[in-house]
Length: 309
Length: 252
Image (cartoon, rainbow over all chains, first blue to last red; front, top):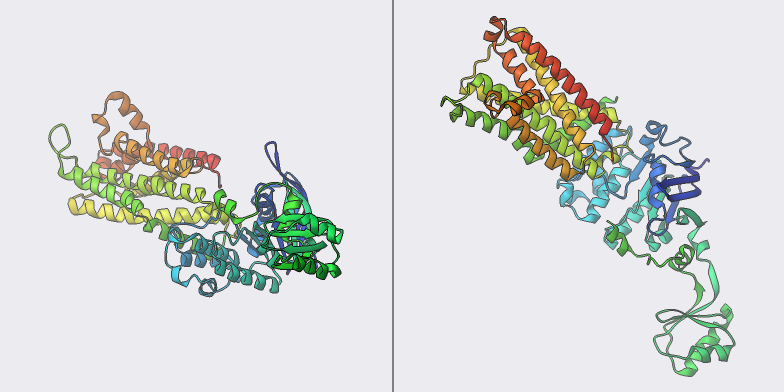
């Protein structure tokens, strides 16, 4: 089967700034690809080029085998898009908008059904401007999905959602994958990428720095992770077991020993009378991998995302 | 062009236009209020109130400015600002369908305006007696004026940030109200202002309506040539304003 989205050597510049700089990847039908990267890494520009909203300065983009900008009308009926800046009419109600959008497509979902499925019954007849951020995001998601898309482009779909709603949305996206939809998701949330994505593309300064399944990206690191609330002397641990001990953050330490020496570490701590809250074979967290790959100081949290809006 | 998409979009556009309180005020409240006020209060220099044969066409013209220029312009400016138009760009809705839906919605609102304002004027004693040709000229004048005002509104809405478009359109509305020969007769204005006012689409719309709806003027043989000239000027205004709007318009 050919890819649903093909991005080849994509370049997008704004004046002097190369927002996207030679990016290539594909998204297969039935796959969720998460695009991860710091603010300004080029995620939104990439999504907008795929949506046909922007013209690539070099390289090309194909959606379902077609140039999405030159042949917009052939693609639009099979594309579901959730833009980061919303685009949801604030004076209209969710019911009016979802009903109108349904009429744009040949074989839409039942508007009443998707309103219920996304938990919007209670607000379906209120104006969008009176909704919370998370509710407005769900309306936007409903507008992206009501036409039964084969390709979904979701730019930070769960921003502003509470944890329960976010989980429900993840389930909905899982269901899209089951239906064979190709999903391109941009996100700042490591957990979202880890939970949902079949593959994660980490981009930085417009270029691809990693592209793989989340568990490949977070493959076991060398050594053990030790977590302890009590103070201890890392130099003495290092001397006793002849290994390197380095501080990770907070109460977490990295001990450079193979997995079978785990018990020796536990015994040493017991002999010191220091409690352990955890000893594990080190697995990198996606966030650590991401921060190392993108190599800048920006904390990957939802907070700066809020500040951005 | 898909009838299904067009119908759905017309319904949405009409719902949104009718929902907005400011739109109702500027589309119906102000022109009807103006008609009543100027009919009751003697504002002319000789101490009489203006004749309904002048007031009713003036109120109709103001109504077209309210719906075609101000309401359409402001709502479009905010749709642009909130990326609503951009989002339409990633759906199967085509630009032509969106433009046709908005035009249909505005024309439907204007049909209601003509009925309401015409009805109030008749209730006050207005007795227009147009010939068939005069009636056709009046309808043509209304449509051309509507296109000209919509073009002006969209030209501003298509470039300016929404709040600035809102301010500019309201200011322009007031300016045309006073300079366009509707609230104040052109004859009363100082020469330079009257000359400027005489160029506005507002003044030319009033000229078409007054001339076309008054059979007496036709009998004199004096009015219809004037009406034809005014219609020709409105054609220029409509074509020019729409051309400028489509040049300036940015969808996002």
